[in-house]
Amino acid sequence: MFLDKEAYERAGLVGKPHGVKGKRGLKPRWIVEYDLTAPSMFPGKKGFDRLIYASKNALAEPMTWLFCNISSTNPLSQHFPTNYTSNPGVVPGIDVLMPKLAPSLDPLAPGARQAFEDFSTELYEWLSLVRLQSPRIQVGDQIDPYLSRYQVPEGGDKGKVCKISWQGFFAPSWSRQTLVDIITILPPKAWFSFSTTTFSKGLAGDNNECTILRLPNSSGEYLMWEVKAHE
Image (cartoon, rainbow, N blue to C red; front, side):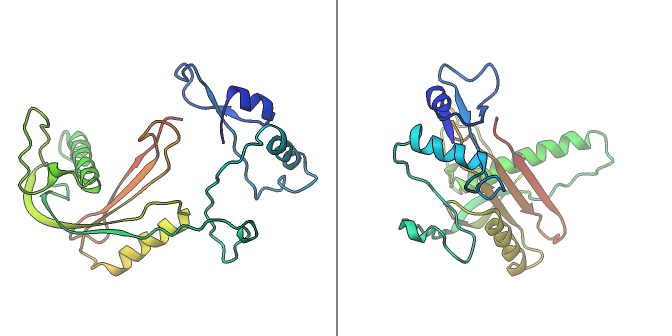
């Protein structure tokens, strides 16, 4: 829960300030987290009773909660929840300009580390633009250079990509199994990119993200980018 100062003080729950010290603004918020499966979350336990008291007295306004049920049974069914199903969005045959997807670097050469960092940064930017379906990486783009000076990294060959996306509240186990399925189904030498993003906790885009790329013609080599939001 993200609570303002007044609600946090009325609730009497234990939390921690949100954001970096000195940059919390004029309306600071507190993060309150409870693991409902913890041993202290049973009737009669101090932590459970404190949460019940706060829910009845300080946080009494109706709220909409988003739950992800990962078990075979649904304990929420007695509360008549509204169920949502996330269907995949498929965008096939996007004509794009392809960069080189594998580094052509000698790891022992002088400056190889910096060159690899530059390569991976440019490649991550290109993959992000593919996810956004940006016109900047599509074949035939003629944007005014005064508006955008982006150019596809070294390579620039024409190719086609397919984007499949899901949006919703998913368990980590679902993402892990989806990645396993992709590796199993695709030919061992085919490249692919798989990205997962958390919900934003504050400003738009302020979230955690993990992107994995299997390099082409090399079934055992991968690149991974991990982006962490400011706490």
